[in-house]
Amino acid sequence: MNAPENTSAVAISGLVKRYGSTTAVDGLDLEMPRGQVLALLGPNGAGKTTTVEICEGFRRADAGTVRVLGCDPVGQHASLRPRVGVMPQGGGAYPAVRAGEMLRLVAACAADPLDPNWLLEVLGLEPALGTPYKRLSGGQQQRLSLACALVGRPELVFLDEPTAGLDTQSRRLVWELLGALRRDGVSVLLTTHLIDEAEALADQVVIVDHGKVVTRGSPAELTADANASQQLRFRAQAGLNVQLLTDALPEGCVVLEGDPGAYVVRGRVDPQVVSTVTSWCAQQGVLAEELRVGRRDLEEVFLELTGRELRS
Ligand SMILES: Nc1ncnc2c1ncn2[C@@H]1O[C@H](COP(=O)(O)OP(=O)(O)OP(=O)(O)O)[C@@H](O)[C@H]1O
Image 1 (tube, rainbow, N blue to C red):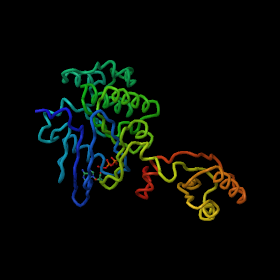
Image 2 (tube, rainbow, N blue to C red; image 1 turned 45 degrees about the vertical axis):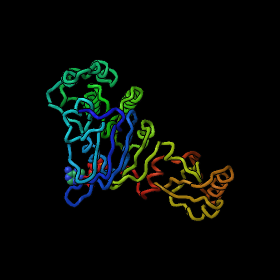
Image 3 (cartoon, protein in one colour; image 1 turned 135 degrees about the vertical axis):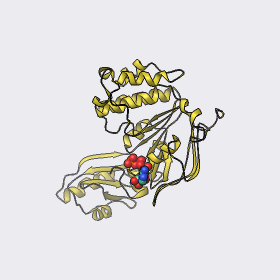
Image 4 (cartoon, protein in one colour; image 1 turned 60 degrees about the vertical axis):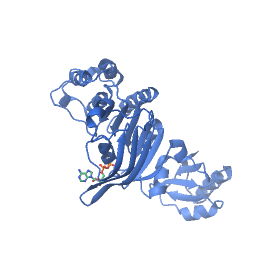
């Protein structure tokens, strides 16, 4: 029996999953309204895939409740299957099946499928129609897997790192397709450790680390900062004395060196701050390059909250 239409696309409460002594998901709560794109953003090992696999009904939770379109993903798996599209990490298919055949096969199982030819065209897979799965490039396999997840016209799609390993052009194709899905009201839960992907696609970003939600909000909400809505970034020789530079700046400004030679000034950045930074660097005989004043990005939000880099 289907749950009422007004239920959330995904509702997770107190989710816990352990693998032996490893707690992969540690009391995670999440609410995803229908028609939204939600990105689970976190570094490797944060618990994203485990969370998604539990939502897909492929794994059982140790504790907590999960509802997908109002249904229990394990107990009501059969009724959810036609309503939910799944793109697992790494994909997979019978090695000899041809790309076009595979998509048509999956489409034939759906009551009201999308046109497979349209999907193949949109995802740039037409040249690979007759190619056996095992001979497709990694990027083609990835896009075919996405096409298979979408061809049944699902209400909700789970995409585990949908653009991992794709080149820039293919990534753009996937982003455009996901944008079209959103406009059509399809709910999308995706995992990623790519900041720009979360920023470009998601209505709501949930940052996870060590199996817990660290923070959540729209990309704009997460990157807004009541005290300092702007930051100054610049590059210069590595190892500058950031404490000395901080001392030269107005109170409330602090200078950090992230990657060697990549500096960020946090605080209220005004023209005086920019001028002080460049002249202080000049006094050290150092050229400050690539100066950029802008909002902080999600990577910095993550770094602030966890002390860790997102990319690993
Ligand atoms: N089948 C398994 N058996 C044992 N440990 C596992 C298993 N699957 C995941 N883990 C561990 O659980 C933790 C969370 O893994 P998970 O794959 O859910 O994270 P993730 O955020 O999806 O990472 P990635 O971005 O690398 O896919 C990690 O420490 C991982 O090593």
